[in-house]
Length: 95
Length: 95
Image (tube, rainbow over all chains, first blue to last red; front, top):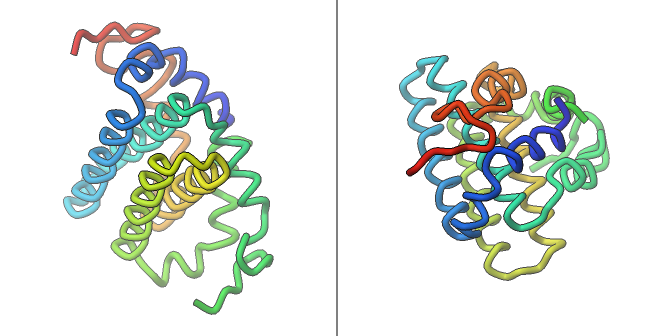
């Protein structure tokens, strides 16, 4: 599924609730999901870990919907098969 | 671009560095990028905001590469055109 299609699915499923909750509330949910992902990384349960990855990308797409950002477009503007810092593929940054 | 293609691009560009940095270091970078996204939300500069959305999905894909998770597959297992909690589209959860 394209990134933009996933974002559109999140819009269909959740935009009514996301827009009522607003930018800050939706960002706070994203932060919570990232924390849960961190906990799952420590526990090492693959099913729980996959579940948290799903939630993080879902809430990232929800937040993008709330603020009107095209997640796929903006990702490919910055990361277009080259490292945006050094211009190489693979990245050859020294830092 | 498919979510899996974006993850594969991140693998080509950054896996050598990501795998050296490891799970915790890559997760810490993701957390930092989420913080920067939060700051950009407050500032309200659309270009900076788009840049931070790009970085968050990029680092999420990098982290998925480090731990061997298929981001697209796991997202669609949980979010398959229905809310995973209430089973409806759009979501009709009361919480």
